Length: 186
Length: 186
Image 1 (cartoon, rainbow over the protein chains, first blue to last red):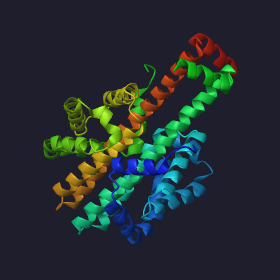
Image 2 (cartoon, rainbow over the protein chains, first blue to last red):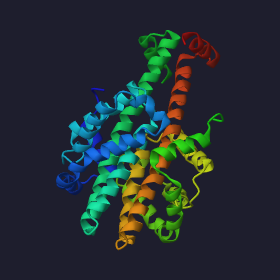
Image 3 (cartoon, chains in turn yellow, brown):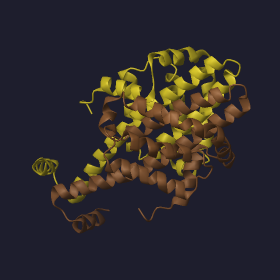
Image 4 (spheres, each protein chain N blue to C red):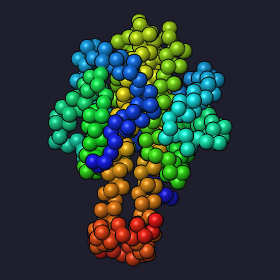
């Protein structure tokens, strides 16, 4: 993992997600109004998750700890700083998701659900200020997309890495032999 | 792939994405106002993609064909019918993305970009109708999330399958031998 260029990954994901410097400023400016609402949003998020049968094995007995981590992350969405350190942190989340064997769809599913809750809140907050609302909706969509892009890149890398480990274990083949064969095959 | 329960996958992804029967109706009701705008949204989508260096190898010489496919899919988001046939179609898209070696982040990246464009349009269309706007934003977020969830499930399955194929080719191991070893290992 140490050879990843997180600066490049950050710029690339920002382009895709439309996370511009203007939107980074908007996210920061939203903090005073939106951060006080994030605890309620976290409760609603886990409330919905707990109705999904496939999610329950990941929640049982852990929901309070999960809520704390989730709230910290949600709060960081409005910090205004989305540099390679933020990217590294999101990248670790993707890795951890593979290690705890979380199904891949939980990332897009979770992001959609958070988007649903945040967009509804922004719509209510800025009901009478169309310009602020448009700006806020675009910025929140961008930071959620940015975070998801990074998580999925590391989830994919970690999944393929874990799959290779599995092959090596099953076949009893050493990594050195596999690497030699792979080099010859190319 | 034939043993996938698409009915179950559909219900599961709908729960995660918050795609309720009410929102399905809302999406259908949006068609007359939003469908005429989708061609412009498709142009804007490929306009942004073409500024991303990593995307250009997938666009060169194919942009007109891609735009047609994309517009057909965008239009289907407002058909009102999101059954197991829709799920199967999105599942195939995930498979095809693996076959053409599209990087995993293009799916979340593309969805974020389309969300950006659609949400801005809805905001403009329903500027003076807060209830309709809230409903439309929630429904569009849900169908985009739903589609992404399905694509990523199949992308993940196809990636791991392709990785096994690669391993068998590199090691010269037969599938039968690998399956026997895997059964013994479990």
